[in-house]
Length: 229
Image (cartoon, rainbow, N blue to C red; front, side, top):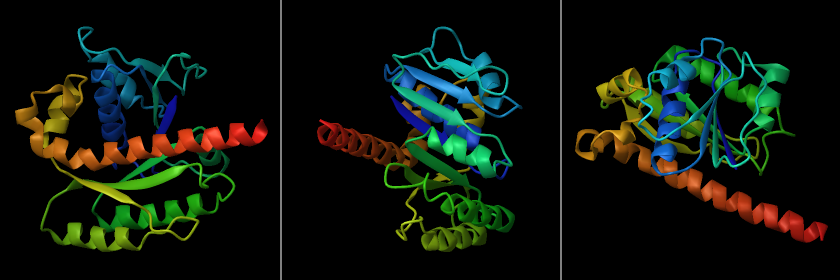
């Protein structure tokens, strides 16, 4: 079971867009997916409510209203976190994840908020360690703009607690495809490929990174079991 946390303390940065597209992508490929919505606004749960029963099933869990009980046969747990996430609540949520994605918008306010949030995450040295893969995604980027250039410069300077550069996986464009998908409870990967090809291409590195992180986790888990034996 893989647990992917989509997190940023700043609201409106696209956490639900990233979380729902991850869920739709894996479900469409025959994986058992649980979408856990920790946000009281329940945007991910609303997205599921608009999803046709003819589409690949996704288990929705409203974590703000019920106890989180993920089915044992689940392949991917996608966690959509709330805004204003700090302190112990942040630490507890990070502990549940083996992969973390942080979307950031290309605006000075969002960049400053992300910098402050990452500084707080970096203080969780007992939580964010070699067993938790962390990366960021630039979201709703309009190419060849000053805001996009400023965001790229900032992202290039981000560091993890280990001192390593924080991976920047993709710059997702501001596309109407995400709006149309959200209206129908779909991911962009459930539209005809020809209609969403530029967006799919931008996600390719994200999925490769998640897949590599999963293989690394399997190897680490095997090493731990071997040592215990």
